[in-house]
Each structure stands twice: as structure tokens, then as C-alpha cells.
Image 1: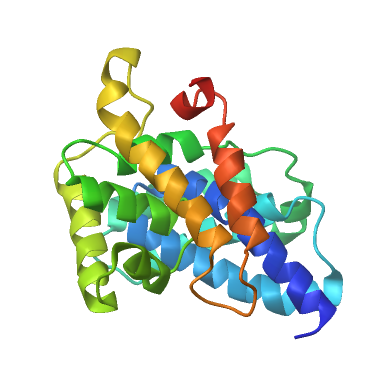
Image 2: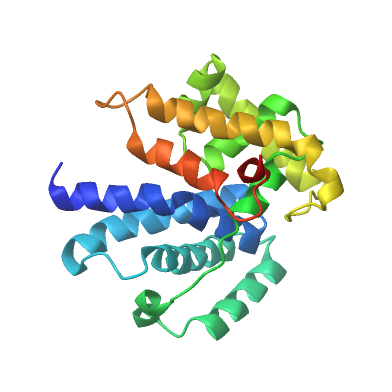
Length: 230
């Protein structure tokens, strides 16, 4: 793997949680957000080798992923109204491909994603697993290893958790202070497991994955994060 490829992958790891959280907040659909981000990463890997990494790679990935989401929904005949709303919003917000590197800011929705994944309507193991998969950026294989279950079992568990959020219309928001204690346990367990996977990696050549350790520490310091106040 050449140096440019390694640098791009490092950017992907650093931006993954923040971009995915923003996409889920915007689209209201875990699977669509994950698929769109994957498409954007593939395109970035092709383009950034030639053009270099943009000044704001997170905004670039978010913009491209939103457009990929619109493309996917255009192929879905049952999503006409949502597709039109997304397309109209994108037309107002983004005037063309050249604007992607000029987006200075985009919202950090990671805290909202934490609390959505850790909603008490979900089983505790599902709360932790879904947060590890989305916010922590761990693969399904890595999450399965953390729970000592098979990959198919974990894939089914994650799919059921996403379906539960959609079916129960669980709000994508930070809950009021009175509801924080019932979600704190899952949040702390998730942060611990992200750090643990980084400290003793189950995959890859390196025993320690600095990116995951740093991500766990950074998430503890997200403004408003209960763990940061303990």
C-alpha cells in the first residue's frame, strides 16, 4: 500500500463517525447513510489520488454521499416524496462539484447518534453493538469478535436494531437530562470497547490501533458527553 493510499485511509477513519452521524441525521436511514458513505469513499479514493485530499475532507464526503443517496432513492419508486425533498435541499445547498472543498463547516451529530443507538427500547447488547458499528467505525467482524458471536449472528442483531429504530420512530436527538442515566451504561460500555479494540486489535498487522484509541478518547470529550463529566 503506497503512502497516498495510507493517508487517504487515515482520513476515512478520522472522518467516518462524524460524517456518518451527519448523514443519518439528514437522511433518517441508517442503511442508506452507510451505503451512500461507502460510495463516497470509493469515489474519494479514486479522485484524491490525482487531486489530493481537499481542505475539508469531511464536508467533501458528506456532500458526495448526500448526492449518492439521492441517486439511490431515484431508483426506488416508493420514495418519491422524500427523494424530491432531498433533491430540492441539495439544489439549494450545493451549486456544483466545485463547491465540495469549500464547505467550511458541517454539523457534528455524533452525540445525537450515540443516544439514538443507546435508546432503552433496544436491548443493551444491541445498543452497544450498533454504536460500535456506526459511531465507532468497527466492522461487523470486529463487533462480532467483541461480543464473542459469529458474524452472521451479529449482522442479524445489527439489522434488527436498525429496524427497531425505524419502526419505533426513535427520535434522533440528545435526550433531556432526566433521561441520561438510563443510557449512560451503554455509552460507557461502547467507549470502553472501542478503546479495547484499539489497544488489542483483533485484525490487521499492528497490535495497537492508534486511530481507535484516539477515537474513544475523543468521543469521551465530545461537548455534552456524560462520560466527560464523570
